[in-house]
Image 1 (cartoon, rainbow, N blue to C red):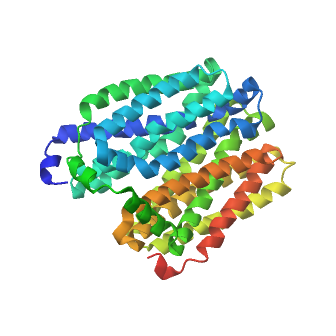
Image 2 (cartoon, rainbow, N blue to C red; image 1 turned 60 degrees about the horizontal axis):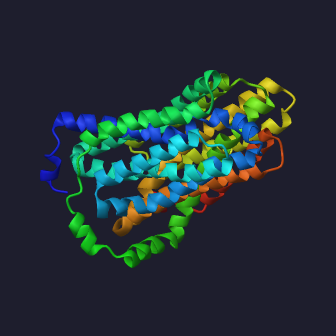
Length: 409
C-alpha cells in the first residue's frame, strides 16, 4: 500500500490502533486460556470424560487452523475493517451462547463459531499493521502486537480461576463477551479501512491459483521438515494445556487458583525464551544456531520427563519436575518458532505469504492433534502428559536432525 493510505492515520491514531488490536488479540486468545482451570469442573457437570471435554479446545484450534488459510483472502475481497468487525460480532454471539449452554455437543459447535473472531484478529491485524505502519515501525509494532499471545496464557488462567472460585465457569465466557463488546465498539471508531485495493483483489482472485500455490508449498520436503519441527513442540505444549488441569486439580488436589499460578509460570517461559532469542539474534547468531538451542532444550525435556516416571512416589518433587518440563517446552518453542518462520520466508521467496500461512495453520493442526491424543489415552492425567511430551518432543528432535545447516540460515 502507498504512503497515502498510511496518512489516513495520525501518530495518535496509530498508537490507539495498536493498543486496540493488542487488546483484541489478548481477549480472543483468552477465550481458551481463561477456562482451562475449569475443565475438570465442566467435565463433572456434563458427566463426560476428559477426552470429550477437551474437544472444546481441539475443535476450536482445528477451526483456527482452517480459518488462518482463508481470513487473509476474505479480507482482501471484503475489506480489513469489515472482516474484523463482522467476525467479532459473530464470535461475541457464540460466546454468550456458550455461557448459557446446557449440552456439551452444543458448546463444542459454538466453540467452532467462536474461533472466527480469534482467527480474524490473528491474521487480518497483521495485514493492517503492514498497510498502516512504516517499514521502520513494523518490527516494533508487530512485537508489541504479538505480546497478546504471551499475555493471554500468562494472565487469563489466573483471572479465570478467580472467576470460577467465586462464580462459575460460565462467567468466564460472559466476561470475555462483555470485554469483547466494549473493544468491538471502540474498534468500530478506531479501525479504518486500510485495504484500498479491494477491486484489484477481486479482479485478480482465482481460487485455483491460490490452491495451487498452497499445494506447491505443502508438497515441498523442506517445508514439511520445517513444519514438523515446529509442530512437535506445539503438539507437546497443547497436550500439556489440555490435560494439566486434570493432573494438578483432580489427581494431585491442587486448588484452581494455585493451578493458575503454575500455568502462568509455565506461560512465561515463552516470554523469557523470546527475549533471549532476540538478544542472540541481534548478535548475529544464525537461525540454525537458535533452533539448535531450542532442540537441545527439548532433549533435556525428554530426559527430565523420563525422570518423572521414576519419581512418581515423591509427590512434591514430581510436581516440580513436570511443571519445569512444561516451562522448558515453552522456552524451547520461543527458540524454535520465530527462526523457522524466517527460514520459511527465505526458502519460499516467491510464495512466502502462502508458506507462512500454511505453517501457522498446520502448527495449530498439530496443537489440536496433541490435545486430542492426550485426551484419548487411557492412563492417569500425569502419565498421559509424560507420554505425549516424550512422543511429540521426540518427533521435533528427530526431524531437526534431517535439516542441514545451510537449509536454515
